[in-house]
View (cartoon, rainbow over the protein chains, first blue to last red):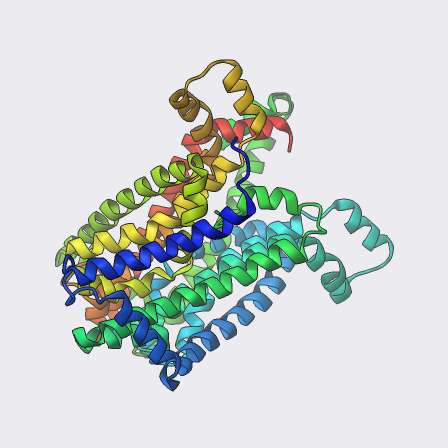
Length: 270
Length: 278
């Protein structure tokens, strides 16, 4: 394969691309190739973004989206760890539960959204429930894989040393499974963010998604604001996914299986 | 599945008597089925006398499903959703595979477009829906464009990563065999990345299903998402449940169909892994 690029190219080229794309956006809208009724100019959008950064509206929307994401993630992770570890250690329970988990994972979580809106209203619990429903199944599968991939020698040693119950859970199972867990968390986090936005757009819960739709509904003059909020949603995605990537790479580098996992499930490291 | 195991461990099979084999197989099927069956029965029994407006008895939901979808013919809703999903998905993943291959081939383009692609990948796709409505208006075109736009990135990045993960020795071999550029691509690169491309295709499908339903719920005149939200707005709870049931069924079937096709297409891969003993 080709030689790795020089250090400066790795910085210059991407920055140049971003610049070119922004200029192209501005040119296309300024020259009237795209109607401003459909697509606002780059300067207007960035100006709107700047204005919103100074406003309280943006931060309360970001806060609402993040709060739903956080609560949903905490519930998913705690529940997933407990259920997944229990299933991993019990063969019969695992074989029985596997088809149910696969089935629920295959059900599009969006299907239950209208029902959840009806029962819980346009509230934070509605959002959290939806996030958990979407993120729990893939995560619990990852937990089961992780705990099962544990070195049998480690398990035997811990048994010989009489480590059992909660101590085994925290000091043996979780660290051994950690690479799988972090990958699972990253997938769950992406799901959670998507469902959070969906709950805000369709369900009308407070957050970035609702502000995007509100801006779209209030006519063409608010379109720059709409794109400003879309950019904010993307920045949030970068922040969250990036954080989990760093965790995957830095914290888990000691784990022997990390090499294989990175080779098999890395995504987005273009 | 079963063929895979027989080819991998042929000797062990012959030792087991037929009756034990049958009993074991029955035991396996029973283990798989008892919990889902129990859950359905539980749903049926618990909801049988339900007076809650949100959770009607399962028997009523099933009867209503028959009415709505077979007698009243709500099927066009499902077919229009599936049609949009199909076109958008095929368009998106085609761009994804071609784009991923190009980025793999041209390293400088890859470095240059990295921040852009990463941004579009992590951007939660439903956030683009209002923008799509503004650009394309309300119609199938908007649906297809949104689904395509959402399903490009998981496939593209997985294609790229799969291709980059191929062992360099294999390229030396291809060079030694004097395989041309295209032949190397089709006989080495594409098959080598296939397992991970499949993972990307699956992630794209998940995104695609979410997007088709969300965009129908927000702005559309037909489709299964429209059907469900319309029923919810009319407070026709049973009708809404039938939509949820049908959507869950369709989504689940699509996923299982995908796994089925994947298993056939990647049979050589699973077999080589089973033989490798890992």
